[in-house]
Length: 113
Length: 117
Image (cartoon, rainbow over all chains, first blue to last red; front, side, top):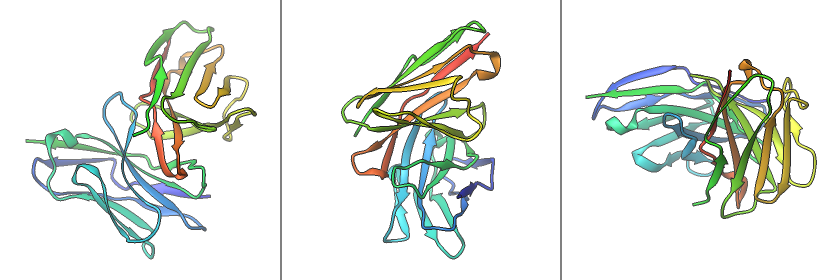
């Protein structure tokens, strides 16, 4: 079985500052990794995913993440955040070809002016 | 991109009644759909895997008699919360794998907020 740990439950950040959201996973087999964003009272939107290949993955809205197999991490970064980036961010993992996802607890990002 | 819809978006019901939530893939077929439950300020927990033409597969601890799942067609899965109680109040979200299978992209519905009085 696999598991996902998001180390920060809430990350306050000022507008135009960089942000990093941490995600670590554990699995005995190869995994596929995802970051999703959830705005209030909405479903999830895919930010980016790692399936294979280059360990640096670029996603939508200026986000990127780096897969580090030795550290079993998949941290999400954005060099300069906007107010509109205020949302809940979820890291997720699957080993299932049909995508049964295991989610982390989520990180609430609050961007202030 | 692919779109998954849910209906209703919000529902309030009395304790003891049953509530049906629909999940539709609007522009693609989905032989598999997933149902998740999310409590306030918490993560999504997978409840069950809905399989078109066969029985759903439930995660450990999920009561299959309480959360009835029917995957009647390649574009529709329904979750019925039977004899709802206040503790069933939650945000229910469905998802469906994209054309490339699960490791491609999961498309999530906008969610249904259930409040049981």
